[in-house]
Image (cartoon, rainbow, N blue to C red; front, side, top):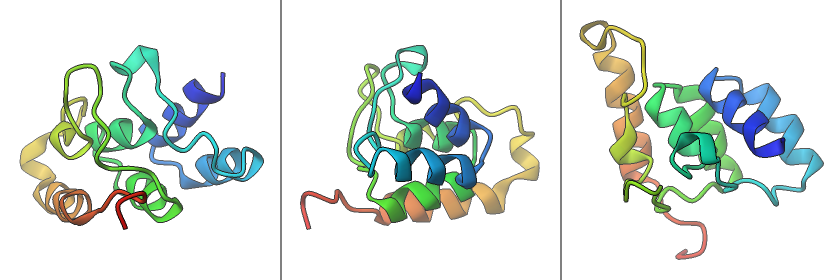
Length: 110
């Protein structure tokens, strides 16, 4: 249930939900997989839904942007994949996510 709730927090761009959940688990679930979303992480969901605030929060808390889902995609490669936004109206948001995820490093490589 925690994985689905984290994914929901990311999908709906709600860092406050993510913060409560990650505080409760002491960040242990930050890269938990969600079977409903191709075994992606909450960061995959945030990227796919153009949820910059959630993605930025997750990166700040140590989410690993190098993990791949079962389609062999990183969160960066999932940007705007699952969005309902009109992408023509979201170029700045897409660019912000591109920069955030392209420059993000794995917390274990540092």
